[in-house]
Length: 283
Image (tube, rainbow, N blue to C red; front, side, top):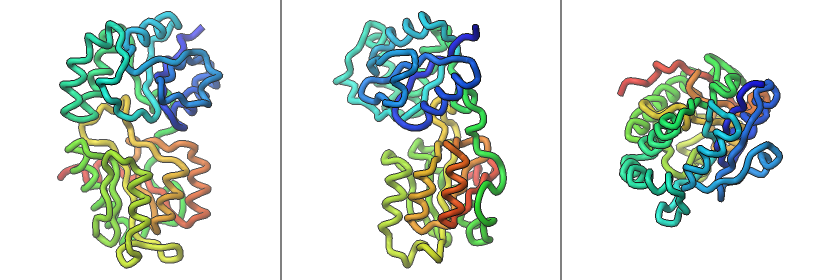
């Protein structure tokens, strides 16, 4: 019997896709759903609910289940550390967590990865657990982007690199060379909703789409935990904001339910394009 994949899961489609794939490929899965962020669709899988501060319990349960490879996936908001219920290992790790948390999300995630690897686990990225989720290179859906859209895409890629280097976010919207929005802690969906409320004079609209959303990893981020993720809602919100398309770094971002994303993009008149990692990578 293969060792089951250990999944430490928050909310959303990504952990569900990983769990489904692990079962379909015969690997098996053991899911630890994080308290306060329990994804209902994961309740039927082997596993249990565990608190964010119960690091020792997580390690003990993964070992008991025979897991070696571990993947973190799903939406989890940064907690109020003073409110966490800590077990002994969580309490021992807390000073380092608090110190690194001040440096940004990426530094915090590295603490967690290092702790699990010190305890004998191999932390893998979502793309290793489910390789077909990675965005491919080139045109994915819709009509080829225009020269204006490609120019916007390159600017947005540069801006996303710059903001990512400061651990701000993974996405940017540019229209006619003008930066309309940069993702921060609100996330991509809320950023796109902001764009939809901007005056049509500086953005596109249905029937006259302009502008591009770009999603790419932060330059030095811990890719095993926090790769950018896109899905059908990303396409729908980009369309509502009047954008012409979405640029996704090829091999550096995830596409959840790609067939549905393609169908949505083509029905709404958007392109999906996998751009080369080198584009806009130097700032």
